[in-house]
Amino acid sequence: MSFDRPFFGTALLAAAAVGALTLLAPAMVLPARAQATQQPAVPGSAPESNAANVPAAQASAASSASSPDQANPVQQKSLAARAIEKVRQVAKSANDIFSRVPCLPPKGGGKSMGSLPHVARKLAAGQPVVIVAFGSSSTQGWGSSSPAFTYPNRLAAQLHRHYPGADITVLNHGVGGEDAPEMMKRLQTSVIDAKPDLVIWQVGTNAVLRDLDPAETAKVVAEGIARIQAAGADLVLVDPQYSPRVTEHGESASRMVKLLGKVAELRHVGIFPRFEVMREWHDRQDLPIHTFVTADDLHMNDWGYACFAQLLGDDIIKSVGQIKLGVNVPAQVQTYRPM
Image 1 (cartoon, one colour):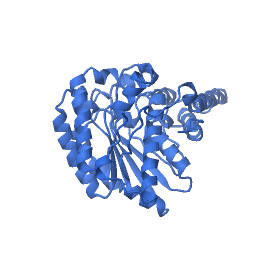
Image 2 (cartoon, helix red, strand yellow):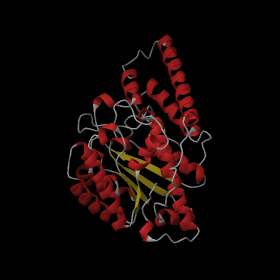
Image 3 (cartoon, one colour):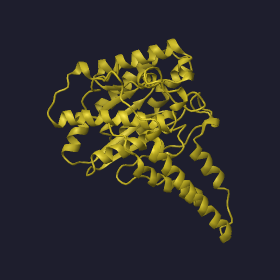
Image 4 (tube, rainbow, N blue to C red):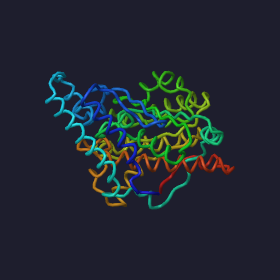
């Protein structure tokens, strides 16, 4: 795995977007050919969607869009200076995020999370690839300091670097506060209608926080998997994050992780075990919780999203490489296990 400033280029582009947010209006500028779209947060709609946890970039955009006097050149100059400084700060953060704490793979290694034949065929044929990141607030990017630092944008940048000639689009269809039942209501419009080649479905956290039955969540997820597979897309599940507000519900969290893994195994889809990977950061790599979790004790921070995206991207690249080389990945190893 490379740690040599892997997200510098994307962060510069997104940082320019932050400047644009400050000067003009809340519009997003995204990396060329490796794009991610984001939907607005839904404050107060569920435990994972709390208005106090709005990402710093969103709060900054709201406060700076307070109708400055566009005819005042002194004020415009001041706004421009602040925008330039913001660009520098974001670029520096992206530049050294892994130099402060390296992003290491699980110490025990791990099996491949399984083959991604649809994506591999598209890449091998030079055809456009569409990836939908589907989930709740940690897909949407709550806790990140900039749109550039959400996991879908980080992943898009990594894949674009690895496949520089490929037309890869990553769509961020995360909505804060949702879990499986709410996601199923928009599965058609947010996922299937996009005609994705790969769906990365992050699910289960809000069900744990609400003390809902993990078995019911697993049943709904299984129905969603069947619909996504029928649409011809590859699929990777992402289970809940390891963070204090989740581990407070220890029994429910453990059952959720186990059941999602079982569903993935039975349906022959990939699973990225975020819970176990994040627990390893803390237990085996000795990282303090707030190295990768924000002060709300729930959402991942810039480093957490960046390392998560890096490890997920490495697995996707490995899986695609196996298919392109003609390696047959048996169904019984379709799930990634870090331990």
